[in-house]
Amino acid sequence: MSSYEQRLVQHVSETQFAQLDAAAVEACKTFVLDSIGVGISGSRIDNAAHLLDTATGWGSADRDRSAIVWGSSVRLPAMHAAMVNAYQIHCQEFDCVHEQAVVHPMAVILSALLAEAEVLRVDGRALLLSLALAVDVATVLGMSADRPMRFFRPGTAGCIGAAAGLARLRGYDQQKIQQAMSIAYSQTGGTMQAHTEGVAVLPMQVAFNARNAITAVDMADFGLEGPDQFLSGDYGYFSIMESDGHAEAAFALLGREWQISRVSHKPFPTGRAAHGTLDALMQLLAEHEFTAQDIDSVCIEAPPLVRRLVDRPVQPGMSVNYARLCIGYVAATLLMTGNVGVGAFDRAALKDPERLALAARIHMVPSASDDPNALAPQTVTVRLKSGSEFQRTLTSILGHPGNPLSRKRQQDKFVDCLASARSSVGVERANEIIAMVARLDQLPCITRFTQLLMPERQPLVVTH
Image (cartoon, rainbow, N blue to C red):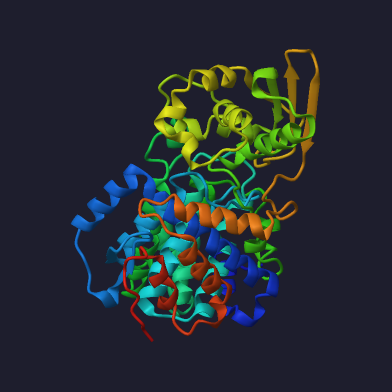
């Protein structure tokens, strides 16, 4: 059997667009749209504006070597545009996730690939193929793990996957594809400490890796050499950053199952580990018609990964990033307002004493599952002050391929995201983007699409 490194290289170098099945092409389009939406919405966050100002100070590039920062009129060198766009995708915890891999596959990958595609002026099919291949690489690495994360997998696996997709987009041969991934591994980073503390650098860990992926392929282009055994060596990815107990089963999926088709939507801007609870609570509220004031307590039985990611106590004065990953806060928000939207983490909401009091009565306990990567099943029990109890167990969480968002709800999320941006985007432009994404595989040049990601006041320039 060839090495894990060789198997990735062969998959990335030899696969053709015709081998993408219709479901994979449709899934690529679906999550391009979703990621563009949350990325433009992410421009509303203050740190996104600060990052854009900082990146602009690093210098500009001529139009032929620059890419658009989504939701703005700013063009930056591709690596810097990718970094800002990756931050905007992930800064509200609203971007899609591959649950089995525990990887947000689009934050690093799409931001890097779309910036590069804009510079190269490739067609839509080239973008879609490189995207599907990059997602395969990142998620196969994630699915290989049989132990809990120590490094921030969406960043680390995403960087290696993005480098693979970028190398394919540039038409690299097998040797350069391997070097691009190897050099990406040599500079990838990001740990779970930022997640544990809920600090603002967390989404920057995907942003750093989007920039690093482009840097890696640039360096592979001029012949820089990285280690051959960047996955399997004594100090390779599977020794230092991740485990490989499930690697053989994961790598066997290459060429057999497109992982972009296994990606889940996020209906709420919070950690995916919280979504099972939110989905169950929405169902219980609709079925039993109780109110937040009726509730005595909420108990959630959850697998270890869920507890590790979002089982943290509500705290007065907690940061936005902490609150997004606090099960008590997001569950109390849903119970009181009927939903969790991007405004749920504004300052006034974070200080709401009634919400904080309800959040303190919501707690998690271990379920029977000991799978270190499982997000389900989750069982939610609501106990009312009257003594009544209502319970719901979910094995497939809303947004998962087995329980997908309706097309209408996908598009409603996109329209709402664009409306929430720093430079609000109206329904007419949103519908233009939706229509363009639907025919990405027919576009002769991707810049016809990327121009739509600027504010509406900007004139569109026809390019070929």
